[in-house]
Length: 515
Image (cartoon, rainbow, N blue to C red; front, side, top):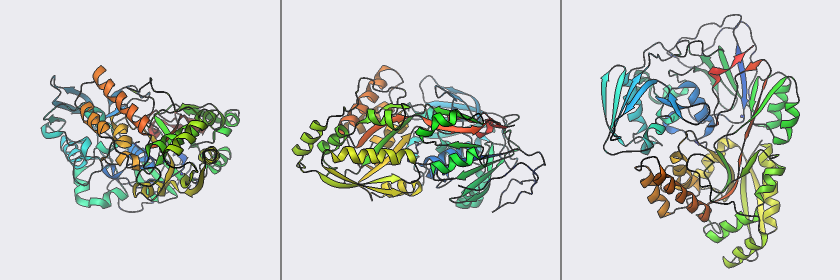
């Protein structure tokens, strides 16, 4: 997506089991006590740090995935990514006309011991729909709130809005402690807490984030660990080496050429998660020659995606037809652009680029897979006369760089934070919208029209037709080089149980046990 959406995951120092005194950096309303001698600590390494912990200001994956460890939402995607399940709301009802959503809150507390109330829900969702929110359009359909009692709240809509329940499962719909946020403002999000399984104890930007167990968490017996330290290690190979040396308990992001070798290691658990993800190359349609559709299509014909899946991913993926992953309402009638060098050259000639052109492409540093893909793209495009220069960039800077329009091409990816395609079609294909077609600035009036239609069309065949038509327009408009849908490799030490990457690309550390 979520989206990440971007190429985000990353270093730090290891904490071991044992006795230590909790040190608080910054002010926390919830007191942190000295850890007992038998405290279980989990060390996870990812590729990139969060940019923010304010849910309404987030679009990068590291921020999103961390917020989901700290805050709860009313509902959330199930672990298998097939349905929505209770979150802070233990039950809910939707009126037959689709205009009233009533939620009954479970008996939950924030990490400071204060109960979660309907007032906190209203405050958080109104904030998510406010002027400062990057996600306001997802929540503006709620025109009125009724607090029935401290544990019951009704959301009223003027007209049906089909993605409403799915939107309430987004990180941006996180339920915050109203009193604390109002008192501290933006300072609250430097060391935030919610009603989720963890709260922030320490955040050394670019290096590590230490999360402490929320002793008031509503799921009995969870988290099983007292601390979770998320280390930011940009280089893929460095994460693997630290895992094998026992300096890290779990990692996300493994070069595909090492997966088989690591699976053979008796000290490790290794998996490749099937996620809602699309890897692609963003094309800045505000800059020549990417303003020309035939050029963008030519680049798609020039790239041998099947070879990338086989050679780089070692078969752990499938070719992409658009910016949407394979999920609900996917257009299975669309076929990937075939590898056709002659067709690519012909389209470039028609567009006035018979001799080709030069361009630069941003490539996330530290990502072994992307380095291999970038090299393959460079070679493929050279065959059609495109001189591609590779520009290494930190993932944390890549999103802001593409958002500012300071790029020509950018090797990236998108993920979905929920099970409905509305979020990602808005993120990658609609303009104007919060990401303006994922920073490509591509615009298709029919896509914009269909986007508004699907949001008020009941789930079923008609809404499916609308999504399929949108996906076809994205395919033909080609604001990206559509690459593939890859699995996400992850691994943990054998003494770690329950660590896994979910279809929504995040991980639930409250389910992890250190033996």
